[in-house]
Image 1 (cartoon, rainbow, N blue to C red):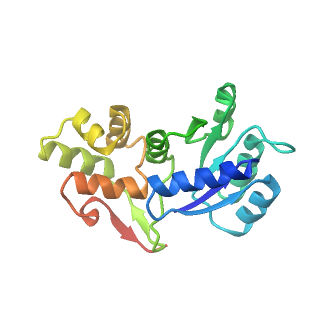
Image 2: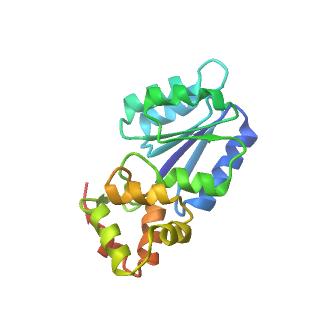
Image 3: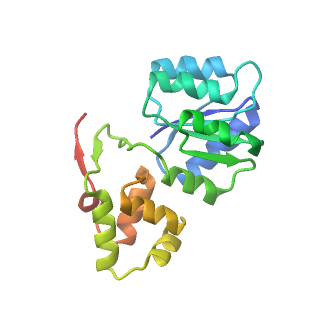
Length: 196
């Protein structure tokens, strides 16, 4: 998973990258403290998830997201800001999530579990996620695991489980692996792969 991090404070960029790598195994992160540099990178490279500050000099995070989405329409945007009053603005770009600094590992992990768009495996193969919601629900019921216990074991809310099982949201790569492990099945039993 390719993750872009943008914050005008360079130390926060490093902190956010460290936090992402803790909660998303195998994440390939790149960080920037200037919006033009981040957009130049995004023009030339794939971006699966962008963690963006909103309140920055010259170009705010909403504008950055709009530009980034013009290059990568299926990129997932997660806003990370110290200003909760910007939450409504995040809907302008259909953000996957909105987090308030300082970041909490569980909130960050939950944000990655709520990504709007399917993920791509690190080997370049796409996950075929058809019937994923049915597989998760059916396997959970077969294992006799209720929604609350399932959510607790994965470190997410029970609403997230309902979203996955209804097909409203798709778990990220790291979470797919944790779901398979929790349900005592292989990742191949949960998803299949297709070449791009």
